Length: 131
Ligand SMILES: Cc1cc2nc3c(=O)[nH]c(=O)nc-3n(C[C@H](O)[C@H](O)[C@H](O)COP(=O)(O)O)c2cc1C
Image (cartoon, rainbow, N blue to C red; front, side, top):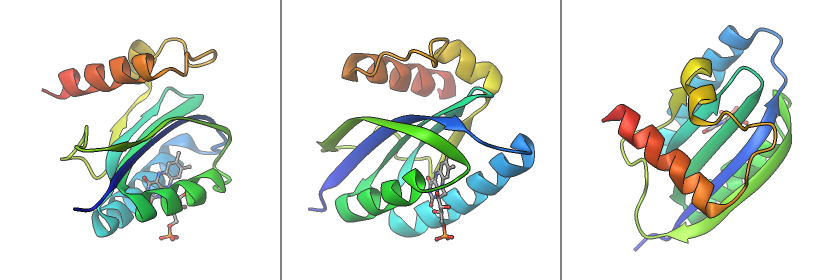
């Protein structure tokens, strides 16, 4: 069986034209992720990104390296890195949660509590919102 990895991070967005840049990020993400078997969520509150990517071990770590080096954001803080048996977001090649909802789900982005427990709360809330 293919080993699965999940990686999350919070970063600071550096987008000159947020709407256009976000659409571009989303389009390339969905396209690439479908190809590499990666799924996940991307929260953007207007200032910060928080993303979870999950998929095959090699593809996911390679993608994370690409994302870290992307100049459309910086100050990338990874957390919640672990091998998993099942995906949290099997149906989403990349689901964008925009500013209004993101700032409701994570009002504490600036001094986020980078614990597994908090991450799992965020994941549960996002899943519940979609249901
Ligand atoms: C906040 C953020 C999230 C991103 N998420 C993804 C993603 O889920 N999948 C992806 O392929 N690229 C993602 N990217 C883009 C990558 O950093 C990189 O530009 C892209 O994978 C390169 O694609 P290419 O090799 O097709 O040019 C993201 C970029 C940013 C700034």
